[in-house]
Length: 147
Image (tube, rainbow, N blue to C red; front, side):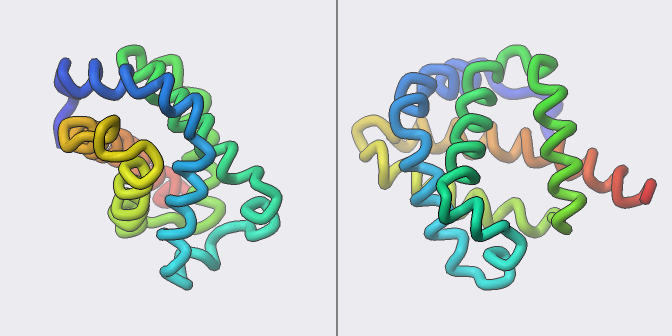
């Protein structure tokens, strides 16, 4: 696992902030539509929060926060702690993270289009997602072991 993100990844992810601010909920809504094709994963989510749009909005805000703070990750410590607690509460495991990536990255391209969501943008987001997923997995593993 890489201990830091490349400078080019940080720059590219930060540059997507305005598009995420404008289209974040559309991206997360498209992502959940893909993700929920897996009934096991769908069952882990509060469907009322999905139907109300609360969960897609929450995730869109988290993704935007990550993009805007990717060069100062300490600013996200509180958000990461809340995510870890929620993930442990709902039984998220390391093998769920690739499923989310497989839904999120195509959703970014679907919503933003190939001119904005270029191969370089998707590669940067893949690196950034994997980096954050590894942080969450390590903290969740520790939380599961402590429980």
